[in-house]
Image (cartoon, rainbow, N blue to C red; front, side):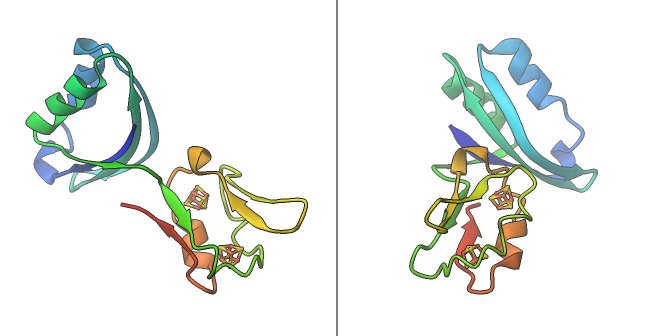
Length: 128
Ligand code: SF4
Ligand code: SF4
């Protein structure tokens, strides 16, 4: 599963993620991290036999966990396939298909919002 993790200033310097890996049988991938001494957020993919227990552990430690089904969503009716978002994506998660329609590969998305900021019709949004 993917989830946004929200760190308060109090939690910003705690080694909770390190402890998660040490203590639980989980696989995780940090897709995006925007954290400083004032706190912040992290987009994380977490799987494995003890993923549920691991998530409960970090929540109990004081980190707010917000699971998401998708990172990014494009409204097909609002999108005019202008392509403005395509070259801005740092991980090439947005592609132009053979029929010139623009597609977003959610699995690759790191939630940076660059596409969202660039879209003239506000068709594309990052889910938080
Ligand atoms: S938010 Fe948009 S630009 Fe950023 S990685 Fe995801 S699809 Fe690409
Ligand atoms: S910038 Fe917006 S309208 Fe243009 S292709 Fe991307 S999502 Fe569609």
